[in-house]
Image (cartoon, rainbow over the protein chains, first blue to last red):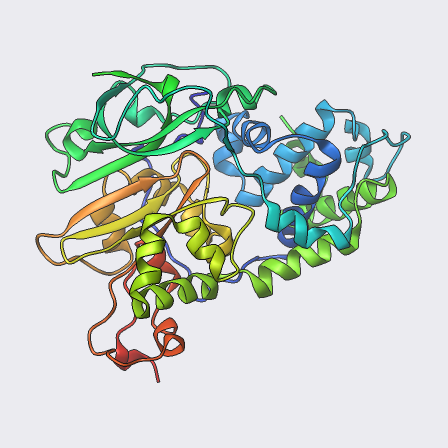
Length: 218
Length: 211
């Protein structure tokens, strides 16, 4: 979706402000919100693209007005509400009011290290050849799906060059709807002036990782 | 719209946004624990892992190894995931790693314009600026402006490559080894490697900057 999260090239922002000696977390609630989000994926059963979409899919003023872990928290609440793991009145009351829903698995302390080490690899077996090869010129499709996509607006409709093949990977657009539909994944590189016009910096190249269905021959 | 938004209106003015969120997270943890979905001890371990075990020291180890072992450097640039795995770093948000090498003519910089994708196993969790609107919007259009925000300028004639991590591929910048470090041990070299130098928003420290 064309949400506020899709920030590449948007000219609203001031300088980047590094924070000297930044701590990993800035408050106790950030620690807990981070860990709860990671742990709840197991009983919740959602995938990374579903959680990304739950964070993106909110009003721009929410997305831009909340801090990073507040967005995580809002996304987590949405995923849990959708699945009936918690109810809105429980979140309001701050205590359980309804029986728990049976869940397949929860994350125990003993399982944390293995869960982190395993991660969530997205590469899948190739069922057919790749349509494009390194060096091919491709054009990104001009699409505006209302659901999740990982093709940023600033590269849509532009011509780039295939720089790397990464094998076949889970397709986020459909994975956010529960279907992996793996596709070939490419790194596609664009010249600065192709993306930003004659005022663009000619000494800059930018790439995105793009799935095959985002691309057409140029 | 989350119920978070209408919480504001019926709280005392001396309640900061922070403490309100703190209470909300605590309540949520209680609900989820009492419902049997969460083990608070698992949360403690997740936090401890990312605060004490997983951080930019891991990436510095990878870079210092690449600087001092040409065969490792070659393996890292050829296929970073198994090479980095040799040093024991793998897993969540590092399932598919690519290392990109800086040269006198080319400087690499990494961003995620769509969220905050970042190679956790080698860099830890991203800093606030990496997740911020200014960085995400500016890095792809005006990377030299970003470098200026970080207080440095590349030598004339250096091209920039910006890698927007829009898939599950995570990028690690291999910075150039500082001059004057001939014969240094891997451990001393690792002290020169900063987090920002592995994102491309900084350069490694110079030998005189470390004791």
